[in-house]
Length: 208
Image (cartoon, rainbow, N blue to C red):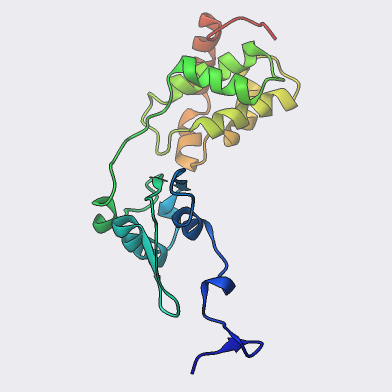
């Protein structure tokens, strides 16, 4: 028996289907294909990852009550992963792999300046230089750009225009998220990194 709304229209039809991003990407204008971002797929569950196999293979979705919804023009799909867990080989075979490393100093400073234009360039440059040096160490988890921005904000919120060891020690938890990394850096290693930053005056002068 097929259920009907108001005695006339079938309930199981596209008219009553709530279209989420995957379906929206399939149903866009053929002259303007969609760009679909699936961010941090490694944080999704296995069921969603399995669901993507059909989507990435044939750019279609099968809904048992309705049928197959297929893209007239395949969307461009970008998938990101932070490697918190391994993705299934079947899914990786459907993708072109590209590794994105941490940005170099010049680019990280540019990102921080663009995201935090209200903060002085001297502080921003010094923090970015410190983080760049930190990434050369054998840490359990190297800080990303997001942690760099958080640390710049921490110094700025506390009223500092440049980095110093006491404040760095108090706010180090904004930059490093693993206990072993915090214990390894605190003390003499932290002071040595701070000294190296001040000896080089960061990546730029105070132009804020």
